[in-house]
Length: 260
Ligand code: ADP
Image (cartoon, rainbow, N blue to C red):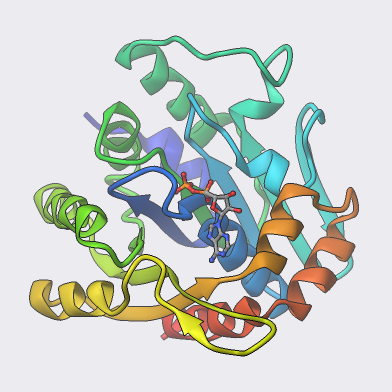
């Protein structure tokens, strides 16, 4: 089925990138936020669309919890965000919807949100390959998104699900832009020794095996946890605090690779 209205609405957006993960809790939303902040701090106009309808966490991570509908412009650092979290009556309200209602919501996000000119629209998805993924891929079919960035942690249990995610992308014709290995080791702030809490290197090995680009590995960073748990209410402060995180350097490198 053709969806020209989606193409019309997204015509002023240069790149659309989906962020996927096989499992929950591997840091997919955190990586979406980091990619968005890194791109914004490099002067790009960025939008984040959160289609994790049952567990939206982007508004909280961006310090936008409790706001209704948000679009922010802060000088040249610009970041806009849309999530079902802005539409719920309260933050504890649960979304108990079957596929057709989820599809309708995603279509509405893609046709009714005014993003303006954007360099990047990052779409944060729920874990796995479910209704939300199928819906967004179908609606974006003619627009042809740039592709998907897949997030994983390095341990074998998470990697098995990543293979399914990569196969899903192949099946629906979505290019895989690359794999990020998140929570890859913890560097002790006192003795600087690195502990590989969830093992390490598995993501890079899998990327090689599946012949997809490996975008980089990001360690466990307690500063990131603090930033995401209690973000400032001011977007500029979030961007500035984020720039002091070690991880921001890694994600800036990843963004440069996305740009190529
Ligand atoms: P997902 O979207 O995959 O379910 P989240 O992005 O919500 O996962 O991350 C789960 C938790 O892990 C969050 O509390 C987040 O702050 C934390 N987290 C993610 N990546 C890192 C990291 N590199 N260092 C430290 N904490 C992280």
